Amino acid sequence: MNLAESVIQARYVSIPFAWITSQDPRGVIEQLKKQDIMHHPSHDGEVAMIRWDMANGVAYENTAGKVAIEKHLPPLSGMPGMGAPPPPKDDEQCLAQAKQQLQQTRMPGIALSMFEKFTPFSVAFFVVLSPAEFFREQTTVAQIWALRDKLKANGRTLIFIGPKPKLPQALTYDVLSLHDAYPTVPELEDIVKERFVDVKKINPNVPDLTTEDLTRAAHGMQGVPRFTAETIVSLSFTEEGIDFDELREQRYERIDEVPGLMVVRDEEPFEGLMGLDGIKQELVEVALNSSQRFGCVFYIDEIGLEMSGTKGGDRSGMSDQLLKMILKYMSRRKIRGYLFMGLAGTGKTSISNAIANRLKIPALSCDLGLVRDPLMGNSEANMQAVFDTVDGVSGGYPLVMASCNSAESISTALLRRFPGRYFFGLPNRESKDQMWADKKTRYNLDPTLSIPDDDEWTGAEIDVCCDRAARRKMDLITASQIVIPVAKARPGEMIQMCREAHHKYLDASTGLPYIYVDPSTQEAIEEQQQGRHIVLPKKRGN
Image (tube, rainbow, N blue to C red; front, side, top):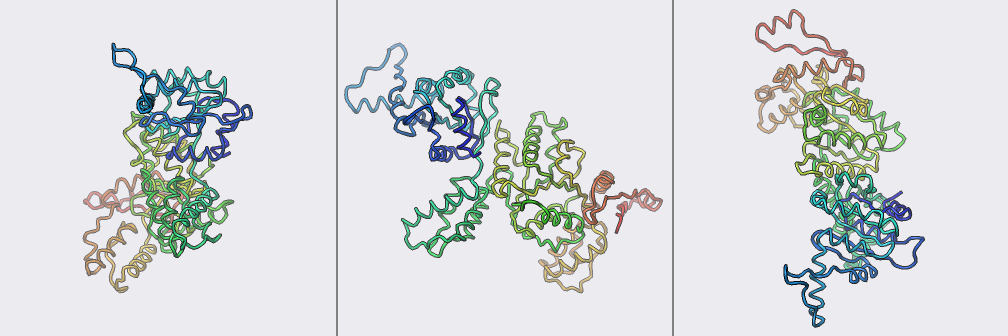
């Protein structure tokens, strides 16, 4: 059931209040008007439709709404102690007085009092862009609550549109919650057709749409709101046809504007990833055997860090709220994600980008730290915008991955949504040799160059060394002098990860259960006593 059908159903059963979560209130109103939500089996003829916002007050959406507003305009309030203002003497004064009366309707209480007097089956759209501000006055909350039974008695509906709110306790169970999802591919095809007609009137030289171009353009706009889709497709029409490169960039720029979300443009080759055969095979098999094609890769960076507050570290409760939203999102779509643990540079992010390139789908990266916002309600709205975008891009079927430095801070409920847990350790000798050969080729380096001592290096550190050698025109051993392996800089953290992953994670390199070998051998103890670093444990199969 789409949004319009849900609103129609709510009106049929006389639900007085509904809140539509949307980033495009004007688009929602136009969408509902097109779907004829005003029709009601108990009423013939047009019913009043109005809208309200804090900047403009009450305005009409149809002829019946205009008549209702004119009939129920609030009386002008005079100066204190001077009574009501005198009646107008001519048409010009009448217009000026009506304008003043409308300005008074910017107050929510006055607008609600007007709507209370409207005829049966009327609809009022209250565009609320700052829910916290709107509900700050308890008198407004009380007035809405008092309207419930009065509106229900004769089929009037009050529809709030705006960011997802935290409703006052008095209204929590009285307001129907609906959501304006981003347009589907068929809806985007209709948008392309409509905009093509408009553009064709302005520039007749624009070539006719082909069925292939229509489908390609619709898929190329997934993951953006309706109004944005109209804008970017209009900009992409040229006298040579649709500029699909421009369409893609406009779409990606819009997605990048969502707080905490970014389109990954790194064309990481799947075949070029060395030492991760276990996870590579798993992801390919899942993609090939899935009943439905994945629409995008959704990668949540450092989920453990942001969810640590759910165990008492976040007094604001924001971590709990974001956790609840993530769990709800994954549960409703029956998503089983992949959780990757390991130090930076071991391939956690690279594998998510590489599998996206292998499947020819977009990769979206989410930073939960940027989703959070100090203003009440904004974090939830940002998180919802992330989910809306992911759903739009993926068609509701994303491949979800997340990374962490430790799963100890992640709640059990969230871990259950990530049954595919993999540990990314340091590459073995064979993998490193393959990495050096690949990077030498990629950076146009002499393949005979000697490689430096790469003890405890990650693949990212090998890449840094080759990049520096290529840019500075130096040999690899000289370039390696500026490379400080993270495993040596933070040996305690690496060993802690190894212990945590023991028999609890699969090895990303082999696909088998990861086995930790305790380094507390006599040799390791002697090295530690002599002030040298501890040799990190070897893994099975290395």
